[in-house]
Image (cartoon, rainbow, N blue to C red):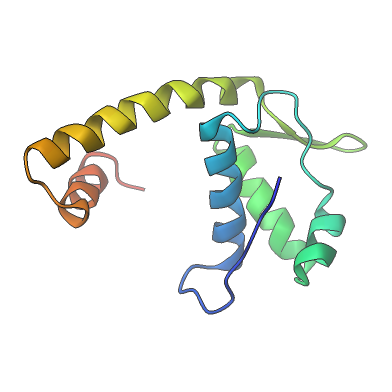
Length: 117
């Protein structure tokens, strides 16, 4: 698993890490039972504070995508296995939006209205 961060991005680094993991789960590159790198290891590789990685992992745990256990580390949760199904639905939605001439910014706005954070 490759996680890249952009320090110049307007997005918080922990959000970038969590987003990268979410994408890997959604694409099926990470599946239930897969282990993520230890927080300290990932922090060292990305040259960031370990607490930033822990915050990303906790966010993913709160979303039900990770299980965090002492001694086991961060493991993709069983519930995360449904994410690949969602990718197909998203692709259909994007295709339909294109067919109707709806731009990406409008589509994102519509999704945010239907599914606020």
